[in-house]
Image (cartoon, rainbow, N blue to C red):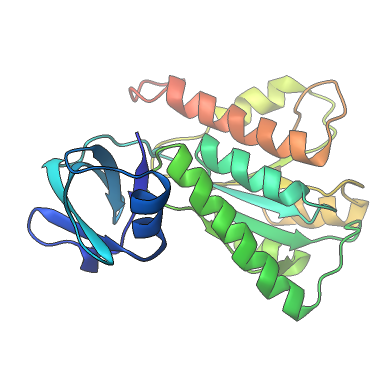
Length: 251
């Protein structure tokens, strides 16, 4: 079933009016007909709708079931991702949005190969946000996660220090025991940051700054993971822990 996102202004009492690129997608790409059903997500809620009217530049969707399904995690995961090279961040955004991340924060780090000027930062951000939207539609999310401006490492650590829990996958002599203990601290309503380095990883100074910001050093296993693999793995571990304990019982 297809999913579309709209602003609150698109809603009347029991209908949504959809125009623009989604109108084109519904009418000219999907070629939907009157009576077909799809999801409309608005202000964090997803509603089952029926295509009831097709006009020249907009369609009307009648709500048949309010709050059809909540697919959002009860925990807000924020991925702080050291800028990787090539198009790896696009893959990271796509997959972590599918897994339930709420925010992706690109971070300039000392070992980041990619160096972006202000013009490129703006165009890349638009591209990254578009990928987040597409992934949110595909995975039936109720909201579109935000891709922020590219932050310096200092700015990222200031942001991370405000989170309820800040996880830093890195070398850890206690291995997965520390990871398990960290995951067991997660509770509904929390904001959890996850910091992933670029291809070259962290330098020692960055690790110490992360610790100073409250970072809990964890492990993702015995194997060395690529930056994109590490990001997907860390978010997946957090998502799985939350989903498996969604009944509210103690871990």
